Image (tube, rainbow, N blue to C red; front, top):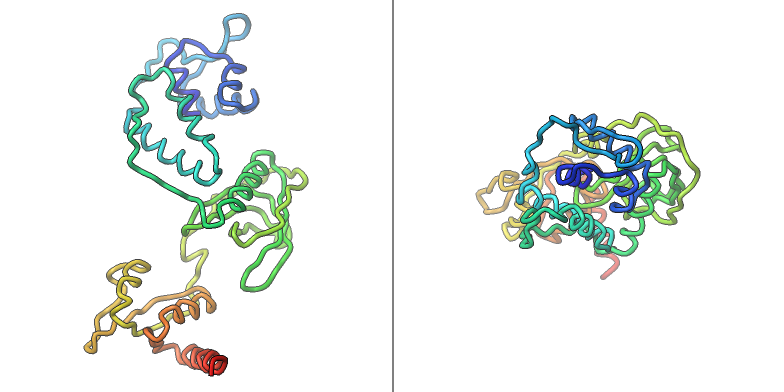
Length: 295
């Protein structure tokens, strides 16, 4: 849509077939984007027949510096981040098309680099591409999902790809649970695109920590000063208080027992769990079992 608007600002008229060829999409997609621009307040006129096409309505004036060099550079940083996921130059090429004929519009010295790929770049990119195509075509996706509760077979109607908490997720209507669910892409395998579905009125996903990671465990932990950097990195400089013996008292909430145990053990002997008592006892049993394996 930004590309279409850019062309309309530079030319008197442009046809739907020309736009479709330029941006490598269908005419139907172009018509949908033109309609979205109109709803956003851009008065676009359509003329039929020879010499027809789309144009900004006569008498309407838009500042042709609507997108400044700084604006375009910010957009470019975002598009590059999408290329880091797809493993292609698709979005960079889109930016080049968008900036054609606009002198000085696209600075070449980008200083913001965003890489949204994971360690498993190949498989993740394939999942993102397949799910993205399924969302556009309104087709179900099926997969095997691995969670702390076990393995399940799921089929969902996908609506959003989400990058949150440094990971990629798909949000959609789960046909097994008959509710909206969020699935982590790195936990799903055997992805397959299935039958078409009729689009629902999909709510915007509530990705607040309180909603997705409700607090179930409230802990107090004494942590050795050598791990101060971790506390600051993970929870900020105000998450602990320094005790008389120099150790750091951390108080915080966790959504899941498994994540909490893993987090505590990652400090090796540098963290002492003070409470809750039942979790402290369980951690003691885990420690004894580990010790028994290596004695």
